[in-house]
Length: 139
View 1: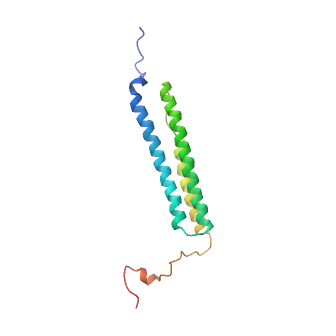
View 2: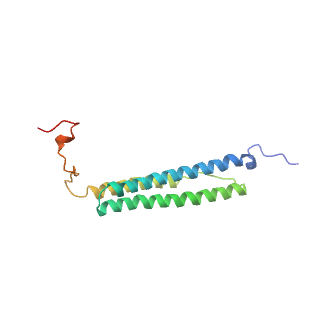
View 3: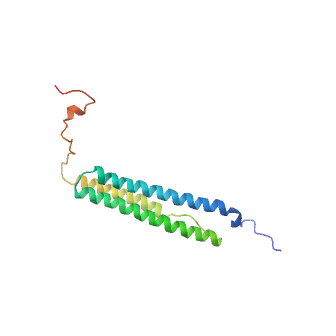
């Protein structure tokens, strides 16, 4: 009987740990997707009626759906690798960077569409600046 290599790891002993780690990673990606979708819905519901708001909400919602699809595909790919007992790198080095760049891009689109006019001042909903000074009444 051949002696096992000192650096080799028996994946059959680590299987539950790896499956649960895969599920935790999947759930974390879904939490991020729900957050992105929530931002899009908040923009859509509370951002007004303009086309700019709809474009910004669409960008966030599209990103959330893409992240859900990515999480699903990655989960099943890693689960199949675990079932086969494959070794190798389990790191995901590209997609987290893409997600951060997407958040920056989507936020820039939102600000760019909101403040595209020179000298834009956000509406105060018919309130004067004096009524917004912590409860002081106008004279």
